[in-house]
Image (cartoon, rainbow, N blue to C red; front, side, top):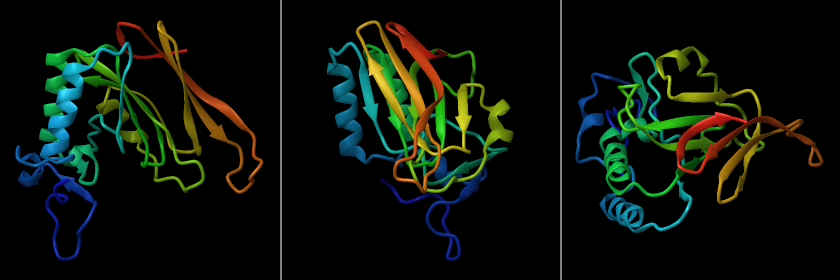
Length: 205
């Protein structure tokens, strides 16, 4: 990927950046690189699967934080994300599901054609699993009302996502670990969602 936007001598790498960072919106910037972007577009166009699962490393959906953005994730590369969204809208693969991780939180989102217009089409569904043992990365709850496409967010629990897929439905159970310091720790279902065949968007189970 291209390096994170608007770095300085004292603040390089991933950070929170403001809307005033014009580099973030540069259409030439890519999260995946040109070769991988082209590959993803070709796979979406050629897919004949009932369920189109797109595995990637972070939260794909937009998450505005009072006019600030994480430069390390997809929010730091909005043009690159929009190219994938435009390809999803054009190719219309069956039941696209984004699966992510790395951000140490649980998320369930409706992936919008235009995140700045809540009424725009829902193109896909996204689920992000938390870390199993690593620490929490902090609450984002105060920003949820400004991001209505986010259906669920939890930062308090560690765990993982467990998916069951049939021709008719995908079910995602977010599994919480009771005690990360105990190797034999039990787990429980924190929250469950379903996605019906032909109906994008996360619905509570």
